[in-house]
Length: 145
Picture: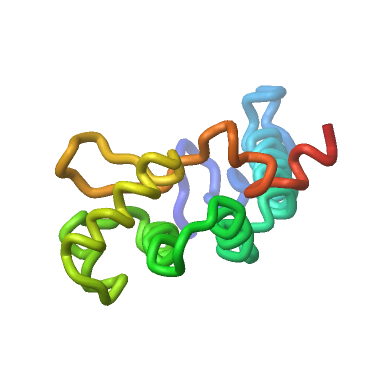
């Protein structure tokens, strides 16, 4: 059995687990705090997932697009951007299956709406949540307040 400073490893671990006289700096206190912290994190993830209903956000984006009288091609850009994280502007025509000029028009429409935005005029677009659409996209957040 190995010894460190005259103590066996198992004695050292047992002492730390039982409390080593260092109070809240002990291994036991750290283990308890870490367990508590991770339980709180998991609880918050669960609560926020329930509030955002991420599994139905595409349907709520569709409701928003319908309210704005967007054509299905414009909604497809929102949907693909949600699924991918961002969408290069050059892919709009391929995704909407329309001519380049029409695809640029659809993209301009959804960018003007505010749900898609870009850091530059030619950069990829990503999903945004302007104040005007929050109630549609995240209804449960507003029902609780």
